[in-house]
Image (cartoon, rainbow, N blue to C red; front, side, top):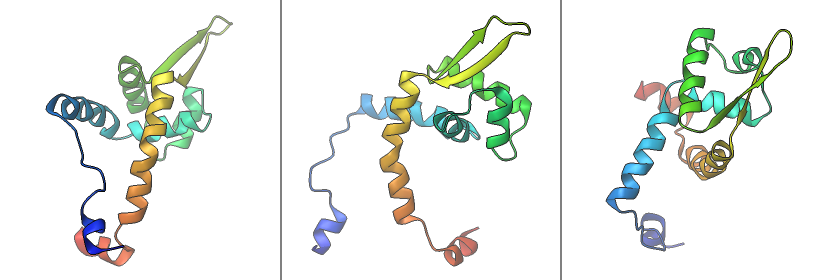
Length: 125
């Protein structure tokens, strides 16, 4: 691979202003603290509030409640009320949420590939 290939993408990037605005909107929701952890927990099968709370380290119940409402409003999470006694509430990724997690796979690959070594991260903070 030549130096030019490592710097420039093979295909020109074609993202217009409108697409950039849409991407920024998605990143704002996903980039909020705890949101990606909640989505990942739901992506691995957590459904009940307490299960999600256990899977996301250092997440308070209050903040989980706030983020679940935001993710539901964004159409990424579905809240399912089961009319039992007592009422049972579960959460799951919506079709849009599943699609979002799939689209984040290349970004996860990018983060792994370009993550600085541990000793460089210590210097940067």
